[in-house]
Image (cartoon, rainbow over all chains, first blue to last red; front, top):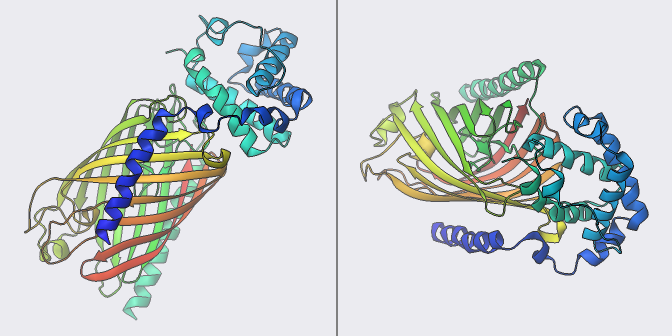
Length: 149
Length: 288
């Protein structure tokens, strides 16, 4: 019994190492084509992006960063970015995340507040959990470009 | 009669724990910048983790510029024993975790409890459990002191105190199996503890530090429900009583960042001569 358990434990190790090397996007190749549909296409994305921006303006951790922003432009860029990432027919034409956030001190906490503004907005618009996770996994690599090191 | 008294005392301890938790709750100013779920719960020795195994994440929702605190209590009952814990953890800037846990091990057949104090520290070395490609890796120590050494000593334990050192790596995949968020954890631990310290440290068989491995795998159904398994390897130092590896299957409900409830099924194998100890575990955690 103890031996079996040891074997079980060690079988976790290679799984862990393989999993560490695979990025979220290649765990599910091809899933992003219907992600756009699951997010409700451009209309659905527009709805939760609008709510997300409202959440950002209410949250004390983020509102100072966004109050001064050109909100119409922010809305357009976010919709285009999410739509493009989800495999939809949009192209994000804005600057890279690194350029946009250059020189702006953003903490991990503020980044998490951004994630929460998005997840709350998706919850409020009944976006399925699986679709939320796919979009979040596509956005997660931007953490390194946005948060000040 | 004695058993009834014991059961009442056991229940009283848990209720006391819940009360302490509620008092802490009414305290204000809470750190809440980490994402829900990433504070984990407190394992029996007080470190952030699951029920039996520490994970690389730090307790509480403190982000890189905050302080955070968590308090917890747990209660479990096995065929011949019970285990109750109460403790707290403090998180500084999501870099350092300091924790304390009091484990009280009850023996159904005897009147005496075995109490163990565990002071813990965990440092996040590198990585972010959610956002970096590499896992979050932390180094932890747990300094354990037995208050009641008579029983451990009688089965051959050498010392009434000992230090565990563990290296832990945890990683979350937001879009994992079936598009659900998945967590994996692997630890290596150096320890002289018998039954995590309840039966003392070192023994007549050997008095060496043994290397053992631990792991956990969990899946989030959504941001509020997590289920998983944990496994903890253990080693023998005592010739009189054998010990086995520990296993648990858990479900955690996180209604929000301030509260979590964990229920688990535990399989602990032989303990102090009693075979195949299995039982249930419930734990409450408050974070602020």
